[in-house]
Length: 139
Image 1 (cartoon, rainbow, N blue to C red):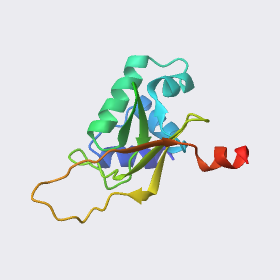
Image 2: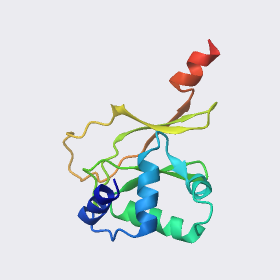
Image 3: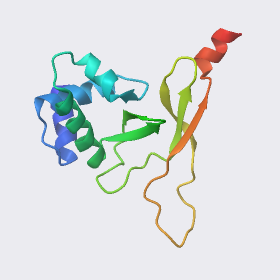
Image 4: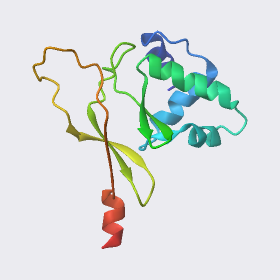
């Protein structure tokens, strides 16, 4: 697994340091987007600044996309199609008001093949409501 992550980072022109490998591995196991604090809590002995710089580097290189949620930024791994020039996360980011999780709803997306006189590099679709798991538990 470590070698696979190293290769992905190298492909994205990112030096595979120990912390970057650990953060990538952790994010790859998560269903929901996570804040800096949530990621930091997983790495008890890691420096907050190092984790923050890792996430910023990942965002710049198209490895993660950030989701702005009120005053909190959350991070989720990108698909392989994203790069340092364009994030292709044209899907809905959904925040559940009950479980407080933000997930990517890729089945709800903005069409990529629209004809315009301008170039769209990034779209941010964000919704709040109750996720399917919490809705089911309410019934």
